[in-house]
Length: 410
Image 1 (cartoon, rainbow, N blue to C red):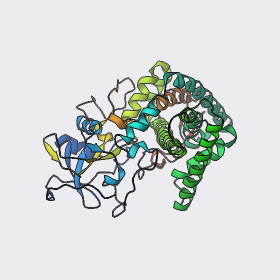
Image 2: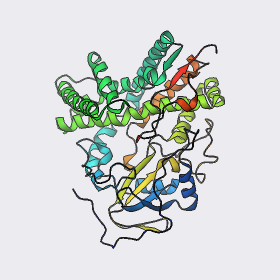
Image 3: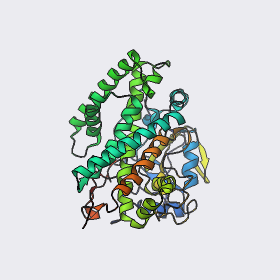
Image 4: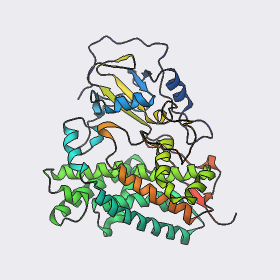
């Protein structure tokens, strides 16, 4: 499908035109690119030159990003987008696969979302909380036996949410290791494109077989619940893949990068350790401060006036959630990590119809995992200099590839 384009003549570049800033300040792995703050201060909606030559927009202000995210005159369909990151110029971006809510608009998106929203109930979240506590304790025990040095990503940050996705989808215990290995291979930094493709293909087969099993013998999980709906097997397998993509890499990197941030701010870690009741606020502040899902794109379906600017039909708008969550107009002293801050209104989970469906599960996982980690290992610290921690600077979801940590006496 071709991108919709404006009937207006192309607009000439203006002196305010920019390209997307991506370089984070040296030595500041938790801060967004400084140029984003400069742009936000001057003009929260500015012209952006995309790598393929398209002249669109960049939104950096909190109110502006929030407004665009909630406005259905902007599309989330992949095939209509121009992408702000280099490397995809000239590529035809295919439409969203079946079940991928992120790349859909109404009414298709509404149909899927309505079926899924009721599955993330308070009762199910409470039941999953008990499993998060059990899984967390088991992995902390394993760390203690393996220690006193581990890669926190492999030992803790990845397996906890991976196993919770297994709980959510009802993946049988006998095949969970295979499932987790294939899921990990998709985003592994050392994986070749062929290995990633093979892992994706293997997961596709896995989910189709899982759907067949759930239809034959349903259990108490989201996928089994959905088999009673009008969704086809292909749609159910697609939704399972979507829930994996949306709920694993994100939460794993929030636990990993969140731990790194707390180790870099020991007074904040001490506050969390001293007051378990601080966990809820701590999670919201870490979500705001880190904003690992940092950048999104929308495309105008019609001419839209916003912030005194005319966004024309067919123009793409890059929304910088990380800049929005550091907007001083919304958050006082936004570049400071303060676990006592009430960070309500942050956009780490997005906003509008595409706000993260599984955000409550992600919160539960972080509320349990982070306090438990710092309580079990009060002397937890990096095992390498902070500048040697490998960061996911080239990925859509920011975080750490590895986090070597140690504990005990120095």
